Image (cartoon, rainbow, N blue to C red; front, side):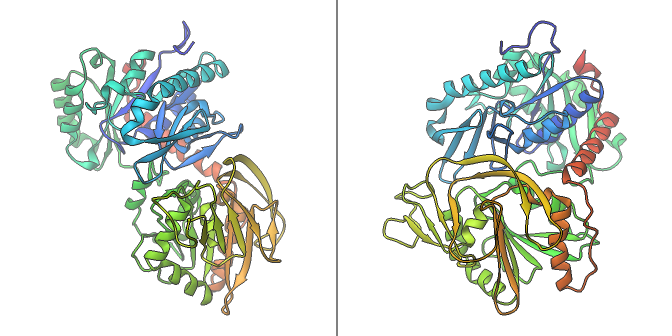
Length: 509
């Protein structure tokens, strides 16, 4: 049943001339536009490589970009929308996740030899499950990277093999901001096999700056030379949309004119779940400052240690780069630190890894001869044991901190390791969060296992108001909606621009 049933709308697919061309957001826009037209659009990316994840209601792990596309379509995210997820470990290996569950580790050079057939089976099963839940829906597929990597084409899992299998009509997206847009498009089309070329139903030039009519001559040239219609020229959007991958974080260097509070975020080598920071990025009075290893910490109003795919390796990086000493001095002088998931684990006293889940013989962190015990940053009285299965679940929790009227939080857990408190400090809801004053100057260290914690408007504003008090700034209104409402507004504005600048009719006919 993997192929669309007779009478179902023909699937659409968004391909890109390269990684980062804008496929994820254009797919989300397409899902929202089709929803406005009364269709049920089913976002699907057969294989995604990302450390930015989401946990669905069934406790399965999927890429955040497919969750965003599901919200654009008005659907609840489910792992069938991203049946194969690869999570890089930084040593030419990746954790392999099929239909939400970890099934092993793959080396890059052996991936297609060992995982091609199981991956294709997972993709077909995901398609079947998605179509069973939403019969009659239109599949809206997202490709991965470039569809014409000639060394990989015979083993392609998620681009043109899938388009051919589903007989999808494809929209090819090119990023003019990167330069060389004509070469991107002509080169991609030239490398398609004859059987693949008819699948391309239209071209889309993305991230164009300036008046659109300035590209009219280029548009006509592409259509004459390529024989494929240019369906639209999407402008550079000033809206701050979620980054498509961690590389996009490097482009976020602009200074907000109304920023009053600076929050430093450590850009860990194995940074994961960076979408946790989107609600803070969207706060007009908050400037996020991404700190890479080797850069000075400075004196921000707060520091966030985000999630990490390789907690012990990133902890060792903090030591080698001198950031550990800077963080400890920062807290002793009254600074505020907040850790999320792996960042929370690093803040503790000890991290135990007897089974080598976070380390190996070739990657032994300091602390004991066999690497089974590692000293943390010594900023929270916590001990973390890496053992057993990965914790994957959506959670609701009452927030006891910061002080004030009780607040409700919701998010998800996605971590190896369990942490326990070694001192009589305040603890919230079943071990989800810890906090304690530190240092003679009134610094504070806190952390949580709850991803998406900043999406709660009231909690986020209460946390920010503690920082603002220290600066003598007035309080922000804490009666704020969930960040999901702001995300919905962003998706609507994205769809508005898509409808204004892209003619979908030739692709839908």
